[in-house]
Length: 409
View: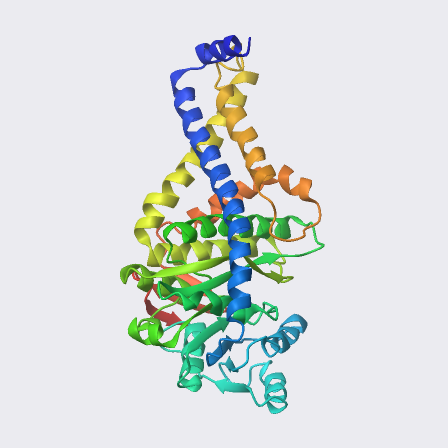
């Protein structure tokens, strides 16, 4: 009976709706497959990472932890202390600010005065690259001769095994960069926060899958590499003209056929959330813009068709519903199959995606999935024909190699 019903539905469905339905089905199966594969990779990789970390915790490699900092909030001030509580025998922490007038500089001065392994570095204003990269390079220069370089954002609290977890896989010479990721933990179920969770989960699932197979991507908020590889790849020279630290390094890794490794399940918990939907959309659009600048072919051949399929699927679904209500045709003759697959498929995707963190109102998030998709499409479309990135109050015009061509303050 089910077969007969399906045949009847297909017989009533016009060819254009069958084609659109097939494309929608591809999107649904691909996204569910990525989510399930990422979950399996995370379970398997978590056990391996725990064994590696335990085995290398006393490796004794000299390490420099570099934390670029801008501004000061209560959570950021608390995060500084977590940098100095790492289970690692020999490391120095370098906190880097643009100027001594930075609100966080006095706090960092006091912290460094009370801890001989902590150092404050004033980098000055950047003129050829993003301010974050300028700060990172100042930290690397201050660190001098070390074995490992580890980098962390100041808005993420670091667990005590953070450094050990990043250092452990670097005992394998085939791995050049190790990286973690972050998860959102918030009691706020507002649209903006849940949109941020959606973006977070979307990035993590794809990131983990690509990284586990053959990836050179990394997250700039938490990564580590050997100093000898940093120098061999010429990272300092390339960074000195770039806007994005992680995307530009990923581009270098890909060109040199080197591999990064996202440690499965290694997620830093963050309570930093966006105050508005527009802020979340602009943030995600900046990530897509950095992808476009550094991996143009991936942006063009991967993300663009996905956006066209999603936008086309939603458009066809809306037209199908409109025709059904304003014509005498049956629901399936109007293209109802597309409507079921697009709207229902997104609910399946949302239900399958286990959230990376604790967020209130999970079912509200699932119910909002279509609105989140429109925000996703808007963020991607904002990058069309665009050559500028606005980040932390500074505007950068970038070329297709991710280089900063102009800087506007």
